[in-house]
Length: 171
Image 1 (spheres, rainbow, N blue to C red):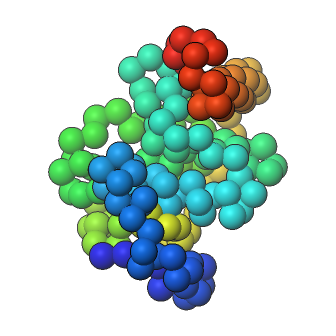
Image 2: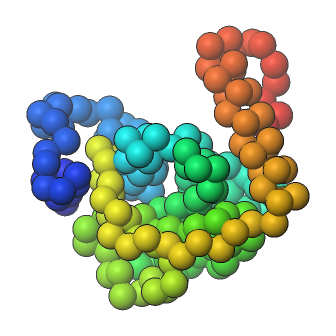
């Protein structure tokens, strides 16, 4: 079930929803479709989101985003109860963001999620901010390293997209 009638204060996201098949081909996974909608929403707020970022070996966040004010947000997309219950790594993400959010679809049992984190409800076309996450500022050295790493990964992905033979995919 999609939420496009609920996003942006009840405004529909556009008539392309009925014919946009790209969303359903996007990696073929519900979590990836949620990440797509989250990224669209964050971009509408003037954020710079990046999907599937690895802050340290062994952790991969679904969405990391830099706000216009320089805050670092992490959004973890959960498609179902089993996806959440089976996730043993999410608490490790808290050390790499100023604000931590969950993104779910409208059918997810949100009572499972911790109250001290943010919440977005998403579909492939956008998201709605249901609960803002508390601000827990990162130490300056970690923020600096993360901003540099996000910039490097984003730049390398853009170059590889435009010229796949330019360099090996090390990032």
